[in-house]
Amino acid sequence: MPFDFRRFDIYRKVPKDLTQPTYTGAIISVCCCLFILFLFLSELTGFITTEIVNELYVDDPDKDSGGKIDVSLNISLPNLHCELVGLDIQDEMGRHEVGHIDNSMKIPLNNGVGCRFEGQFSINKVPGNFHVSTHSATAQPQNPDMTHVIHKLSFGDTLQVHNVHGAFNALGGADRLTSNPLASHDYILKIVPTVYEDKSGKQRYSYQYTVANKEYVAYSHTGRIIPAIWFRYDLSPITVKYTERRQPLYRFITTICAIIGGTFTVAGILDSCIFTASEAWKKIQLGKMH
Image 1 (cartoon, rainbow, N blue to C red):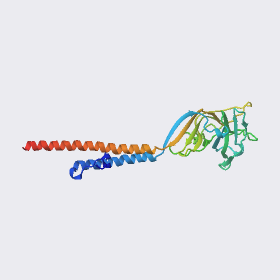
Image 2 (cartoon, one colour):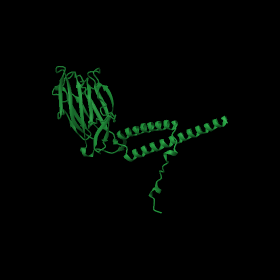
Image 3 (cartoon, rainbow, N blue to C red):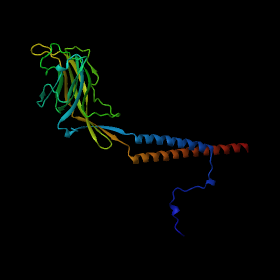
Image 4 (cartoon, helix red, strand yellow):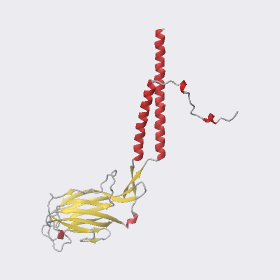
């Protein structure tokens, strides 16, 4: 006998004239197809959507930064002249810079009565502080007014990612206009290194931070009040990493096959039960008639 390759067919076909369509089977089939379509679209949406996964580890993520962190500061002092406003930076590595002016800009406010300070500078990755004050002014004012509004204080790269919600600008919008004009303000910052890695493997380095603050009146050794706005910072050893991930294609295909196969199997069992029950009911009714 010639070899018949069709013997390997595990999906044997039943001739159509031996099958019997039913209204119940048609309803179940339509509902089954709609259910499969719904699950397929749900899985497709999940496959297309990018997932953000976060993890924590102990390390310095940006080793190529030279031990520096970029800082962006934008603050308004509506009652202090621009010639009196200065930025001082100091840290535990011995840095002590009074009147930092590189990459900074002072914009007069209220017809020159106030000032908006915008600065871009770098700090070392060690505990320290930077503060806005009148220390660098050639002549100290009698009663400097340090009421202020902080528009922005951020560290590292700016992350504009909708799915990542972090405290990258925790002090943004801080309003101290109703505070004591002669009071100093201490903002104690705990800076947390943050890495964002997109699907292509490109990494961006930023920093989140938590903040606590206090307000007090400080006197110099001569008895004068010299207020300032202090930002005292320390770095956390913990790094937060966000990674963009997409569901693997093989997992998506496996899920779709499971949906189709499982739905058809359950629908077939349900249809078979209904058909068997209806046939049994018909036989019972015929037996009553006879």
